[in-house]
Length: 155
Image (cartoon, rainbow, N blue to C red; front, side, top):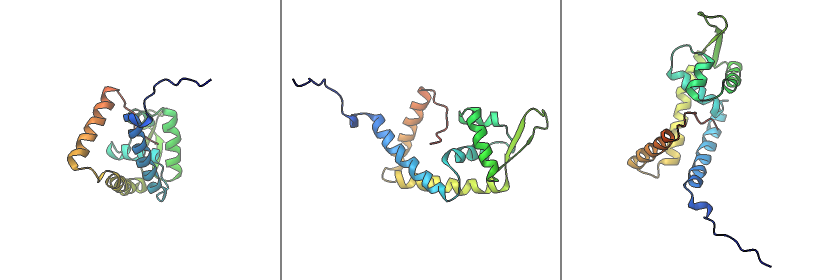
């Protein structure tokens, strides 16, 4: 006896399918570009957030900015410390806390990695017009706002 199949939408009928397909490829390509610098996408996200902020910050502030857990940020900061891209010291205002800051090496690396990110975007999105890129970005931002997505993508 043959089982009757219920009607089901095709995989490629879903916007999420296309978003994930493009996102996976964009992210994978960027991760490969970062490999030569010895930095992961997650580490890049932390470095870039720190580059735009105050000279010193705290792990909890980085966690708040990125939407990552304090535990995840702590592990990433440890890796960045080992690579000499950030430094850590006791907070001058409260010894229970730590201040972290980009080292000279870390601060000089961020613009180079930002160039790789820009190149990656051009590689993947040059087939659509500037107006279409703006529209796509605005739509994705609208969705993120509506869904209250605050985390920085790290994979």
